Image (cartoon, rainbow, N blue to C red; front, side):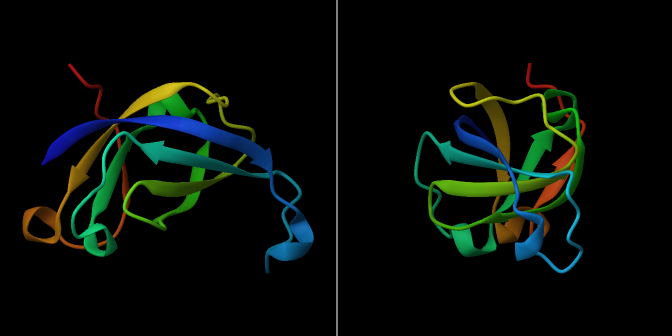
Amino acid sequence: MKCVEAKIVASTRENPATELDQDPNTWLIEGELNEDITGWEAARLDFSVSKINAEIVESRVSEPRRFTIRTRARPALREGETIHVNVRLRNDAGAGISVGPFEPG
């Protein structure tokens, strides 16, 4: 496992017409990690729930440095903020993305 910094590049309300659930209170957080993640397709990212402060509906890694988090309700994170993300590769903890209650120390 490795802890990296990520910068929030956008936090916007999602257009409800673009999703099956058409929830009008859904937000997208887009972030950029401060370094490329080798094997990003199978990486698992753990986020600090207290920093996001909204229910996470789903999240995904889209490029070696980019990720998107979909939340229900407006997240506390704003564009320009920096967060810590724990990155696990497949051999550490399986594929996918999870939300962790960790607080970097």
